[in-house]
Amino acid sequence: MPKRKGAKGTKLTLKVAKKAIRMTPDGRRRLTLSNMGITIFPKCLLKLTNVDELDLSRNLIQNLPDNIGNFSSLRWLDLHSNKLESVPESIGNLVGLTHLNLSNNRLISAGLPSTLGSLISLKSLNLGMNQLDTLPPTMDALDSLQELGLFDNLFINLPEFLKVLRNLTKVNMKQNPLSYVQGDGEGMQKEKSKPEEDVYLFHESSLCRTCLKTCQEQRERLTRGGRGGDVFEEKRIRTYHGLMVPNSVATVNQDVWRIRKMEHKPIK
Image 1 (tube, rainbow, N blue to C red):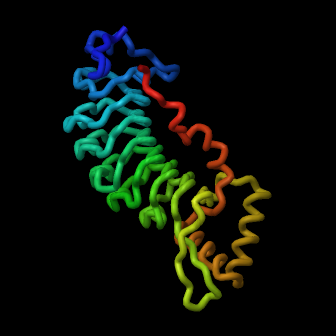
Image 2 (cartoon, helix red, strand yellow; image 1 turned 30 degrees about the vertical axis):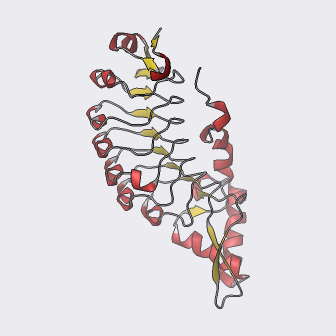
Image 3 (cartoon, helix red, strand yellow; image 1 turned 90 degrees about the vertical axis):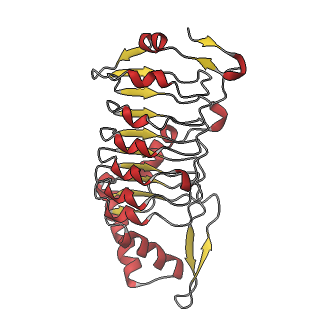
């Protein structure tokens, strides 16, 4: 077992880390160090060049090392429920990364580097439960991205680059102060939506035939006209090609994506 060092957190050695590596059913080497009271990212982990998956979630880590990009073998990285305020630029060197979870931290928009756009293999990115209101525009290069979690943040508008990500099938925007248009078509004004309003996007291919037909009929009605608020909804659908509202599919994933703060108390 890792040694404890009181207020300084858990002391993790390379020997202990090596013993914690397990093989996944699909043959990957996974290192799980979740909920261990770790306060400082163990730099010894960077020597484990054969690790494919790393779980450091539910700890007390405030900073990642500047050379985190040297962990080139990583394909899966979970850092949810820590105390991160920023991410180093070198994370862009993890070009083989397919899954990245940074939810439930203290990230602000200024703390996200433009190099996130270099993670061209990324399929799933979870940035929920932070303090973000914008994302680096370089993320329009994430052509492989399929799922994006932005729930419980400070977004007023949907990120513009979403419209160019053709493989994106799920976007979770729950609990953001998104704007909507209110008025009669003339002199419309943007107002902040109610905090409890849920907004999801999903790809047409995720729908059953009946649901797809229902959404298409609704879109046709909006095209012919309607209330001011409906006009904005139609504009949203057209702007983000292939994505529709609301997202019944994302609701199914909500229990997986949404990490509640009460579940992640560090071990005393």
